[in-house]
Length: 398
Length: 211
Image (cartoon, rainbow over all chains, first blue to last red):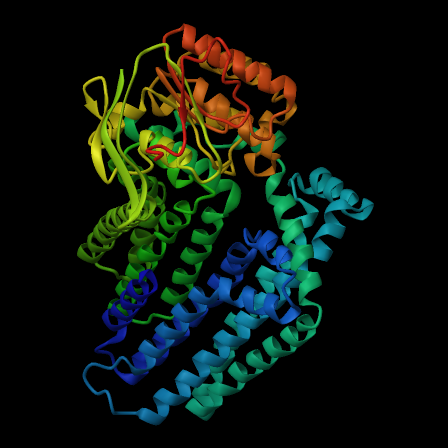
């Protein structure tokens, strides 16, 4: 049921975004979305897959190699289905002329699906394989030496175990963005059909990567799961301990919500680099602004980006941040709704400044649109928090 | 005072766990819940910790209907849940800070209180690590510390001794006896309870409504 609601929301967002646009605008929208999707896939796949709470169940059942592969894809299937649905809506969600330009729509559906599937396969394969290398860098003398050099020369506390994941993130994001950019260049010279070429190449790259992973997927899965479990477990000493968010720093949170907001932010900062992901999002929006896509498109893009922020609320509802019994003991449902809502004010200043500077440099969004974007951010934050908290409450009591 | 009036619970029509149960627990009562697995002890405690709602009947804590005003009730309750699930990305120290702050009880002494309690439970150098890395016993110690840190008037504990070593079990038992002496109501489900112990005021045998 919850999946159906998510799909309905995705369809609504897609139609709101491009439902009345021309085919040329749809093509631009699809490219922009694939740009975003490349970053989203690169950042979210490791988060969705590892560490896997079901790994002990898989061990108990001694699940086959094929079964483990299936399990991995199932764990990230909601992301996959959601993105594929949005690609479909961008291409075919045409409210004014649904039957016009059908061949072009099919070409871009192929381009979108191929690019996405290639990146998705690449992400799943590379992250699933990353555990053995990550463990080597984390535990070996070579890794220790690298950590020392980074600390001495660059004054940066790099954990060498994170290097393979970092490389994967950069690789997947770059492959996606470069493929979309090359596709746009080819389109200008050779027409729409040529935009399929880089997309198919990305798909082949993904398939080859998955082929390399498939036969040993059970070994990779257990090794990577073990690594991520240990990696995220340790440790909160030293620099991180000093830099962690403190209660007194949350001056912008009302007192009754402060303890909940503090505990959620502290945990989110350790589990999920939300700040870096959002910063990347801002950079992408700015990159697209630089292409001067027009006022309406930019407003839609900022609105979409504002909504994407609230994935943080959804993540904070996972039991690993606060099991349902704990939530009930710590605070009332109203308190949780307001805490999750207020937590999102952490990013609003950055959003407001970014939209304002964007408008100052490129002439849009207008002042009214800026206010609209911030209003949508605030209202949607409350609605997501409300819906999620009530859904959790309903599920928990019998 | 905790008063159960005609409490019934069924998971579905015909699947009755217990019906028309009446109890009154006074401050300083130490109540043991004993019975085989699946006999309804956890359901009973989940009901009293507002993690489950009765099919019928009412539970009052003093004048509070606990299922109508959980917030007012739960601030008096220390809870050890049957699962060891806890927020994974906080340390034990931070978790206890959260509990104290959520009840607006934080003061200059709180940090020392937390450390003293964790010392007592022998949660030593690992108290600064994330709970996700703890063993079952360490998670249980953290849960127990979280229940005691607010000096509750009512302690609801579902198998609090599970996974604990013998010396910690003794420490926890002494803490419970101290709480009872201080006027707290203690409700504990445990397979290790000694029926004849002098600190026990009453034993509730499960399943209830035996024919």
